[in-house]
Image (cartoon, rainbow, N blue to C red; front, side):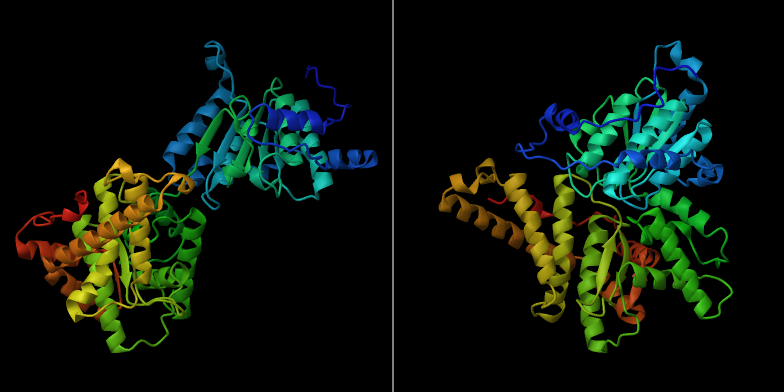
Length: 496
């Protein structure tokens, strides 16, 4: 293979030049004229480091897109990269080049590395995988050697797995400077650089920019539909009873990574095995969800009185949530952590970004306290956290959204008078009170729904979305009205 790269010339890193490129050009970081320690391996260690850099073995890349469940949007983007690598002539005639770098970023456990390996598997190129497993000085040489080997064996791919963990620092560091130097050096060598990143904010902007990583693809948490597909695949090799509905399980596990889904479903099998069952039932999955996600101690004792009081509190939250956004509650329980408040509910997904939906969240958050007051005529001593969260959301409406007028916008407190801050606090308090009154009004107008949910919670202790949706459907049918009828949200209007 003919190229201008001299394989005998180990890549040398001039830290001053690299630091200026990485931090100076974009102006994102300021080194304050401090010297940056830069360790390199001793010359006699260079040959040893280079010898460690080898293409990945076939079994390490033995994964295909068929093994990646869901995430069709991400796979479509990666399919195009594979097509460019395997059918280059279609793109060269258009004057299109392969991206210099692809970055997959998102929370740990969503499958970024698996997706990257599936793409590289289909590209049929030598792959060099770089992870932070060495000490800093050796790792610096390993970075240089990996890019050198990839250039010598182009066309090739280099995978920077968990690149944000290459350095313990943030922004401009020696390790990130070394990565940038490597990327810049192989730009004309038909080397595709692929990186997986958990926390993209740890990386300097100059490293992430176009020309280095041309495509940045977010791998988000799976949605309900993707979760249902993932769950069905995870359960395919397990014995599962007919009462297990994949969509229901997906709702219970909404907002969790693929790795979490796998772990929780495996724990469900452990519950079933411990009871010497032949199949995994819905009850086993609920037990795993309660234990793994919510840290619920189902063996802890709870008095009938406490259970009933908690049931009304959680029924208030659940009823308001379902009235304002039908089908939104995935699970409700009178159980709680062994040390902490009793009871909880969980909603599915977000309410959306609209002002009305934001207000609905506040009302639903205050509805637990409202239900207790309506039922018992007394203050709910377990609602302090709900009030605090609702207050913080009212702060957003008053200070950031300026729902009550631009005069209450949050400005630098050093430039504000005490009177301005006091007026803002008064608006926040009035808004919080309005929302609480609206929560009580909503529940009083639909008290039979609260009673039905509270009674079922006190009896079963935990209700999942199927149970709650059935109760809600019966209630709406019995009232002979649409679920939105009769719900007047006066608290959503601006305070006078």
